[in-house]
Length: 178
Image 1 (cartoon, rainbow, N blue to C red):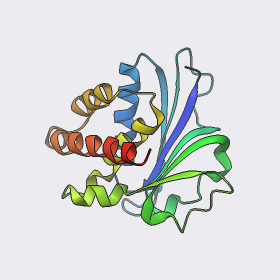
Image 2: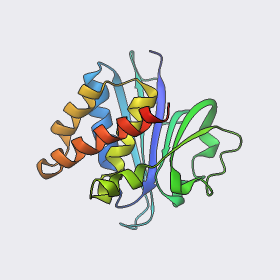
Image 3: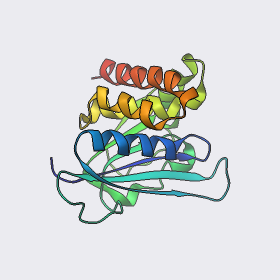
Image 4: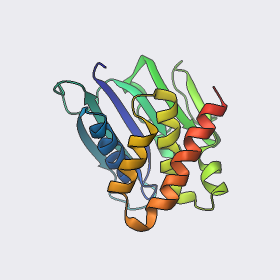
């Protein structure tokens, strides 16, 4: 697998940074080298938040995302913030309520009911985990087993069970739309 770059973006309080740490761990379980960076605005809730990962079988050439192969958008504040980093083959995954807000300059996106699925599980805070499951289902660069193992290793103990359910539902909603 050649080097690839991805970004999970949303707002503060959505668990974007935790999702990035879990995904980095899962990619490590896939025997990939991973460079992770994160950015968040100083407001704890509502400011732009993102987790970037660059992964490769070999050494990571440059540790910061500059040409995204995968982008996840979970909040209106992130709807257009990464457009300049998309390439012609980027897979963009968007929470469906944001469809009207995303102007992706001709890039095709997959709109899935990510936050609706989290609400259906009884915990809107699991939106990040639903998104991870959906992304892995669509992208296929990480097995579900490794992603769930990373959840168990990285997530706080009280979140492991709900996060596991959310990841599993993310896989399900993505496979239903294929």
